[in-house]
Image (cartoon, rainbow, N blue to C red; front, side, top):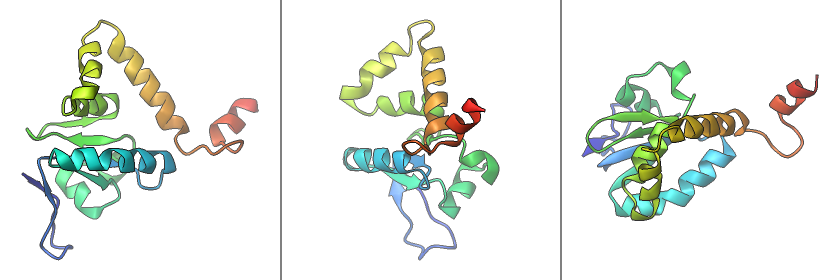
Length: 138
């Protein structure tokens, strides 16, 4: 079990086989986290925001790097980010395993990284107001 505990908590901590960490300031990310929380809990996996102060020490990353992508801490202790995190997490769900299989097709991961990068850049865009769209028009 991987514990998400520190001196800052009530010392009960939260334990899980692995953890998915997401940007809690992103509505899109939060919706996805809520969607996967229950199926992950059934597999003894946890979901927590990247903004949790315990995550910095658990992942051993500088705060400015932490929010760049979703993070997955696998049961074996390996850490993944971005598209690699999604593929690694897909191994835990029978219905998501085709993503794991497709990741072995030459060029597929390049597409996954490009797609993830696009979503990550636009994840905080709301309707017509988006800094990326505004910059693109100028």
